[in-house]
Image (tube, rainbow, N blue to C red; front, side, top):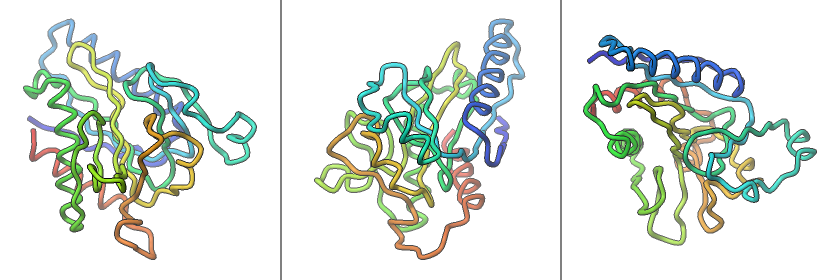
Length: 221
């Protein structure tokens, strides 16, 4: 089955959300009409500084007030994905796979596990060992130690087997922005980026890494 690679480049979160919702609604309608040629799209982009809170998340996990968010050029959105609060910003690969997971033979759980595994496989290319952490969706380094730190957050929504929202993989991310939230609701775990783990003095090529991640994802479905 063909999976389309789509790069939106740098896009405001509100604009990306509106476009996602339009695509999602169209595909759900197609599914209800038993349309067989629903496109399978792997969408990636980057956002200006933004915090998003999942539908069951706690606003108390946002530690900055609106005035301070304005000072650091960040916006805030409460949305309908799973998960708690997270940060998106420049230097981070944000993925919004828009898929019919039924056609791919995936459940919501195995779909999330496929995203996790594709990131784990990608990180192996850079000799970085990543793993899952029981009870905490996403991809972690040193998961079961006091040094546990997340490199990829995942929060998805699915209806009629059609997915939206997705994942955020830290590449050249300014990790200081995570200081203003309890990432994913955790107060005892850290966050990291590929650039930090590699101790790279220069920025990594995000477009190249996005395409590598896409190829790992395709291999798994």
